Length: 117
Image 1: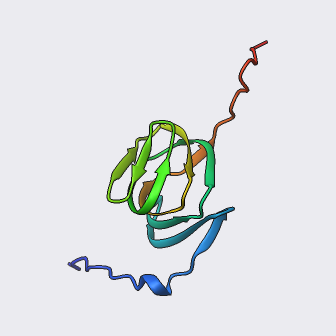
Image 2 (image 1 turned 90 degrees about the horizontal axis):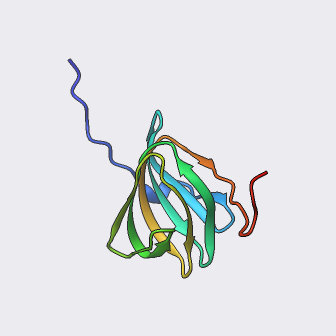
Image 3 (image 1 turned 120 degrees about the horizontal axis):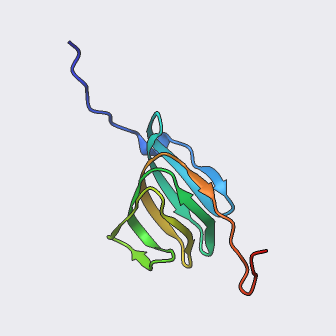
């Protein structure tokens, strides 16, 4: 029987990939729909409203990120459970470690004053 081994990642050798304007990802580990990612937000960068299909946990290493619930600052943790709907902005920039399962899907926003039908 083979015993699993530790995985050490040379983070500096991993490339930053722009995922949206002002938001870059560095994938540290990925297996199926699970991944660990460093996310760097430029000041003012945002992620539009979306729904989590899986779980997302973040730990803010630098700066802060704000969503519909509040602001997560350096040294703090937040969890977005499956089904969580929110948008994200980093007013002053941030570096975040994110542990994710599953993906996300966009959620349309309804303009204030709009009515059904």
